[in-house]
Amino acid sequence: MSALRLRRDPRAERAARLVPGNGRLRYDMSATPEGPMTSPSGRLRRDPRAERQRLLTTGRDGRARLVRSGLVGQMAGSATSTAPVVKKIRVEQPEFFIIVVPDLPEGRLDRSDRQVLGAARKLADAGGGAVVVVGETVDEASLGVAGADRFVPLSGETDPDRRVAELVAVMDALSPRHVLLAESEEGADTARRLAARTGLGLLPGVEVLGPKQIIRPCGAGRQEWVGGLAPLMTLAPDRVPAWEGDAHEILPLEETVEKPGPRSARMTVGAVIPADPATMNLGDAPFVVSAGRGVTDFASFRATVKALHATPGASRVVCDSGDMPRSTQVGASGTILDALCYVALGIAGAPQHLQGLGRVEHVVAVNTDLHAAMVARAGLAIIADAQVVMPALCDVLAAEYGEKGA
Image 1 (cartoon, rainbow, N blue to C red):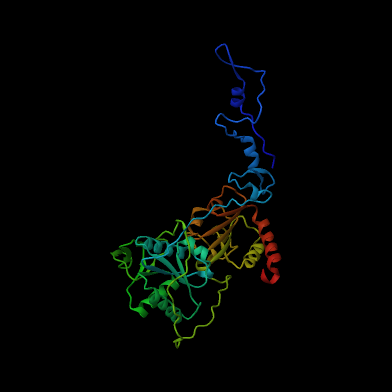
Image 2: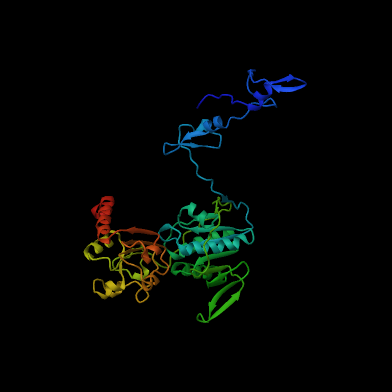
């Protein structure tokens, strides 16, 4: 940092050269003002150049930059973090609780879980309530972003009766106004077990939810039922938007939840055996890798699918040519996917094929055409030949996980 020096003050210099003459003041330019140059008010005049020099520091890229916070002495010579402060909403004393029981596939919030949390957030905000997530271990930061205020972990019991007993214990401790679940295979089963165990009213398949009324289909889907909210409700997928507001802070729960005692099980539940991706039904597969017209080396394609532990798929052109079986066809005339991730190798993206992507969350496209429709649909695109990408991907997986893990 350079030494502080006084900056010249032209006004003070001009005033120092004023001398009387012929009845009025005049300027004597031969006079030399002495002492520090101060303003007429007696204060030292600001020196913008010196102030700018004091605010200079070294950035992460090695270049000089300005730090206008004034903390130059503390940050000089070190990298400065300029990350913005994330605003979080705290609900400390809620008027009531809304319980959400998410499915949490593979320990993460999926699309349906976030939609149920969005619906719960709408009900809670209407009356000053808090959203409590009850489920297995999950990242609390993601819960806060999705709109949750509290979290009650379960033991991870696979026996459905014991899991329902844990949920009932939480409900007895919190006395929630509503309990929301997804109208999925697991969520619908849990909701009906809770209704049978507690005797509470259940409204399944809710499509429109508000603070005072809901709308759900009835009469085999040909009519709509409009009425008030129930203690137990399940939400149809893709009907209620997920929470998109500020993240909430997960606070500890003040109420004490006692774990239920052991009960004699009516059934024996074994370990969950994961399905083989190679033989899994395409419509149920969470991870699908498909080949299109741009794939010519199908031996490399099958090796890539195996290395990724994915389910193979194909476009209609590939199935018509006989390179892949008809059961692997993705599209309007094939299978509509509901996968977490879809990798399209050499697929341009015809409208019929894009219709088959359904509710896929993440799409990865590998194509040589930057302007292909599949590239526009994808969240991640690799502009390259699939024949080059596939072996390179297998090599990376083999190096990362070894031959057995790949």
